[in-house]
Length: 289
Ligand code: FE2
Picture 1 (cartoon, rainbow, N blue to C red):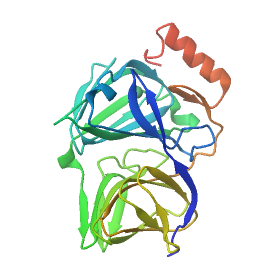
Picture 2 (cartoon, rainbow, N blue to C red):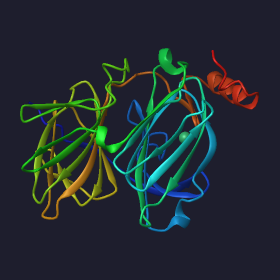
Picture 3 (cartoon, rainbow, N blue to C red):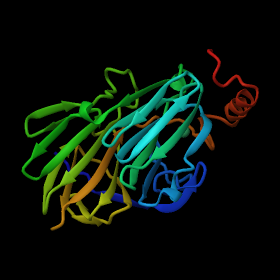
Picture 4 (cartoon, rainbow, N blue to C red):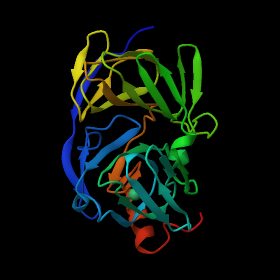
C-alpha cells in the first residue's frame, strides 16, 4: 500500500470571525489554500472567555456543509428551521446549508476553556440547492478504535484498523454525500505509529493540534497548529514524538468544479453568488425551493 507523503504545508494564521471570536485558520486562509472539496478549517482554542463569548450571531450560509467538532466547552446552535442544539465535548455537528440556512453559533466554556474546530466542505452543483439539514451528534455516538499505539475517533466515514471496522455517525455512502468524507480525530501515545487506509482518489489533509507529528515514510515533521496536504497514495502514516500527539485527518472526494465564494456563500459562478446575496437580502434564502 503506497504511503502518502507530505506535499504542501499550510500554516494556520491567527484571525477572528463572527463577533470577534479568535481562531486559527489553515485551509481557507487564502483562496489558494483550499483542498477540493475542503474550503476552510478553523481551530478555536482559548482559556479566556473574552476571546469567544461574542460568538457567531445569526448569519446565513448557502451551497456547502459546515462541520463543528468540540474538544472542550460547548457550542449552542439555533437556526431558522427551529432547531436548537447544544454540542458538548467530543460531539460533532453536521450542517448541510444547502439552498440556505440562517443560524447562530455561540461558544460556551466549561471550566474556562473552549476548544474546537469548524470545517467547511463544498457541495457539487447538483447538491448545492438541496433543503438545509442539521444533526447534533454527541460524544457517545462517535465510535473509537484503539491499538497499543493510540486511538482514533471516527466522526465521519468508515475506517478499518487492525482488522476492525468503525463507521462514523456521518457516512457518505449512507447519506448519499458525493464527497464521501472521512473525518478522524487521531491520538497517538508516546512514539505511537498508526497506518490508516484512505481512498486513493480522495484528497487528504492533516492538522496537528497537540504535539508534533511525523508524516509518511519520509517522517516530515508537522508542528502543532500546522496543516499538511498529502500526496497520492492509499494509506497515511503518522508517528508521534516522545510526548504523543493529536492530529485531525480529513479526506474527501474532489468535486472538480469552479468555486465562487463570497463570505458564507459558496457557489460555482459569480451570478449564483449575486443571486444568493439577493435572496438573503429579500428573505428568500430560507424559503423552500
Ligand atoms: Fe455558521
